Amino acid sequence: MPGERQLPNRDELHTWREFIETTEALRSALTARLHHDTGLSPGDYVVLLALSEADQNRMRSSELAAHVGWERSRLSHHLARMERRQLIRRENCVTDSRGAEVVLAEPGADAFRAATVPHLRAVRELFVDALTPDQLAAATEITAALKAHLAGRTPGD
Amino acid sequence: MPGERQLPNRDELHTWREFIETTEALRSALTARLHHDTGLSPGDYVVLLALSEADQNRMRSSELAAHVGWERSRLSHHLARMERRQLIRRENCVTDSRGAEVVLAEPGADAFRAATVPHLRAVRELFVDALTPDQLAAATEITAALKAHLAGRTPGD
Image 1 (spheres, one colour):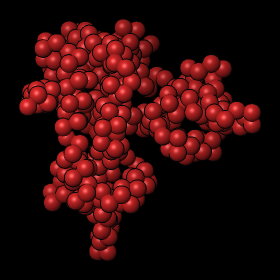
Image 2 (cartoon, helix red, strand yellow; image 1 turned 90 degrees about the vertical axis):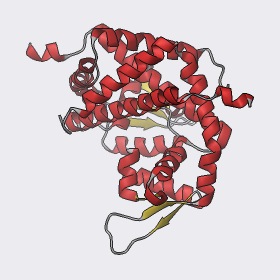
Image 3 (spheres, rainbow over the protein chains, first blue to last red; image 1 turned 60 degrees about the horizontal axis):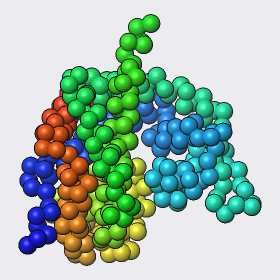
Image 4 (cartoon, rainbow over the protein chains, first blue to last red; image 1 turned 180 degrees about the horizontal axis):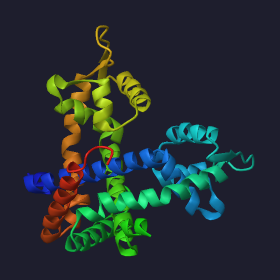
C-alpha cells in the first residue's frame, strides 16, 4: 500500500500532537496574561499589531483579513467592536472594491504601546524561562527548518 | 530598573517571534490542506475531534467552548452552521444550566474519519519531512520543557 508509507509513525505523530497542542496552550496562556494585564483580547492585539506595523498605520480590510488569517465575517464583527471602543476607525473608499480601510486610532495606538512591556514580560516568563540556552538555540534551528520547508512549497501542494 | 531585567533580549525575542509565527503558519497551512482535501474547516475539525474523543461523543457546549478555547458566541455561531450541515446535533437540557449538549452526528463522524488519512499525510509532509531525526528529537524535548513549565504555573500567574 504505497499511500501508507507517507503517514507518520506513532512517535512522529506523538511529537506532532504534543508540539501543536503545546504551542496552542502557550499561545492561550500568553493571550490570557495579556488580557488580564492590559484588557486587550488576542484578537485586539493581533489587529493592533498589524496596523501598528502597516504603512501609515492603515490597511484595507481585505489585506488585514489575509494578514491575520480570519474569515471576512469574523474580522468585520471584531472590527465593529474595536471601533465602538475607539481603538480603530473604518474609512469607506467608494472608488475601491477591496473594502474599507482600517486605521489605527490614537487610543488604539496608546493601548498597544501600554501592552508592550506586559507582553514582553510574559514572553520571557512563559517561553524564554522554560528553555535552557541549548534548547533555545535548537528552537531557533527547528523554526528555521519548518519555515524554509513551508516557504519551499507552492500554495495548494 | 529592576523591571527591565525581566524582558527578553533581542535574540530571545527574535526566536520567540519566529517560533510563534511559524507554528501559526504551519497550523494555517495544515488547515488549508485539510479544507482543500476534505471540505472541513479548522473549526469543524477541532469540534469533530473534541466530540469524537469525548465520552459517548457528546459534550456540554460550555465544556466544548473551554476545550476548544473559543468564546461562547463564536462557538454558538459555528455550531449553528455545523448543525445545518448535519455534522452535529444540539440537544437542549431543561434541567441543567450548563447549556445544550452537543452530539456528534453520523455524517460528522463519517466526515471526521474520512479526514484522518489526508490529515496524517499533511502532518508528514508539512512537519515530519521538514525536520531531521535529531531536530524531531529536539522538538520533542523542547515541547516537553514548555509543557512542564506551563503546567507548573498556577492560573493567573
